Length: 452
Image (spheres, rainbow, N blue to C red):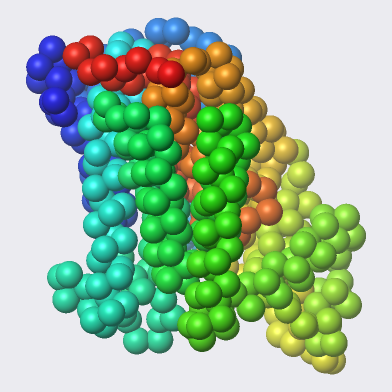
């Protein structure tokens, strides 16, 4: 049963709101914010002050410290400049409103510890929506419009499914398709059947991510399963089959479909350039706006991402310990024009397109250390639970939360903004579950849950 009869009505409603998060991400930021506010308010009504006072532990102290630092650092960097730029006041307000993710974390933390979090319902919601987006994307690619008549926007290189003008299908599938793949663990099937299901659905979603054209998402998706196969001993044989199938599918798609060929050629060149160049923007003193690093003759495979990375790094260097406050790149970016055959070393953007650089620029080494420790604690909690757990099914169910979290913080990937609504809700949702992974109510009591 998806609705738990032994749960109070308010708890069931709270679970439904949480399970609507993947849908609200599709609808947009307004829907996400309304959903988060509803979760926070209902959680406060049900649990009251207990979400703040009960079970204070190391991870919660770290979390409180991170949010306090974010608000204080933003306050100090913005309060004296309110009359200079409307963004200073906006950033102060946004830093306070960002506290909604702290309350979201605490509500989920309390819900899980009270054994009220409906894991199966959450899986079903994520699996259904990921499958729907995959089917809709395929329909849009074949018929030039999706299931509700939305066409690929003019000038877009990739299908957008229900996301309108945003080319984020691959990123959505890379995260939420994991719940569709590991959902089989809830069914009373043999291990071999489950392995075959995991393999086949993995391949199908990989094809859709490649066709969606999100190159980084495809790489992370494959990396997720390489990591899964490495730590799950019962999948060694199917790992070889999966990786062999991926190679065949990718190279066939790469050779036969020209847009995919062009996009991935560009991706490989940019990735090579970024990997070679990125360490230098941290190590070298680049006060000179026009540096040889970005000269015209050095532009083979160059990417605008490296200039945006450089903007964030140079901003962080101005205040390495405490940072410059929330969304500081919008104000702190220095802009210029090409000169003497050189390309300007910085590029203005709303964020640095990398979580590590953004957190460093906005909260300094203090904020970065705090959030890093939170992630490390959550991963260590997972690994302790995973390797001590003999139940194959519960190990499978726990896997999506781990894979999403660890690759969301993969340091050298290009990302959206850590502090935007869509990314933050996924991050703090996954962290709250991963930190409490050993306390999840994995199965209904009436379900056969014997591991092998």
